[in-house]
Length: 221
Image 1 (tube, rainbow, N blue to C red):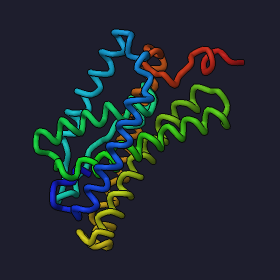
Image 2 (image 1 turned 135 degrees about the horizontal axis):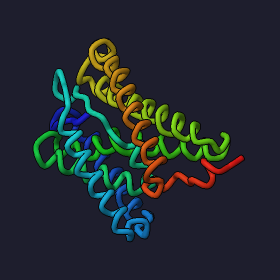
Image 3 (image 1 turned 180 degrees about the vertical axis):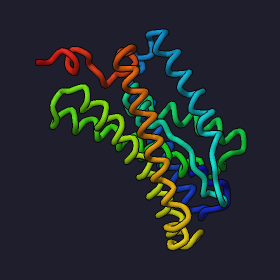
Image 4 (image 1 turned 90 degrees about the vertical axis):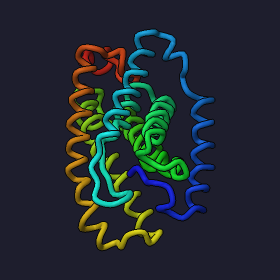
């Protein structure tokens, strides 16, 4: 995560930048901006960006590109939907890149790995659960919140490992021994924090979760 400049091939970075720009433009066009007309939700949206910027700034690492931090992609996707979640996390990435914690040339690649993949996976899980599983609060919390968040950050780790190994930056064996296993701990932390946040919001601030319907999840027989 947080790849610096000149770590990866320039061609790969520019291709990722082009793809990320197209995705961001699509999100800006299709995002449900009316959702933020409510001042309280807009404040929550902005507070989430600032809070995650601080979380992303606190990371641990062993070598360039081999660092770790929580994502928050699943939580934002459940709160605001995938488009607004991607836009919010793009601003978070913009902030940490401005402060020198990631590279400008690799902005698009960082966006794809840390934002687009986990956010779209989380939304896909929510949509599947919404169609296939019972309308139950515990299903929403544990599957859509807890389990999904853990898998989402694991996918980020797998994708980062693939990019680093296929670009011959680090050997696959080294990454498998010294980098990828740490995502087990990160997945547990991401899952726990997301699950607790979703539980608290479902109980006290259901309006903050655009994917949550209290009549559907709490009042069904």
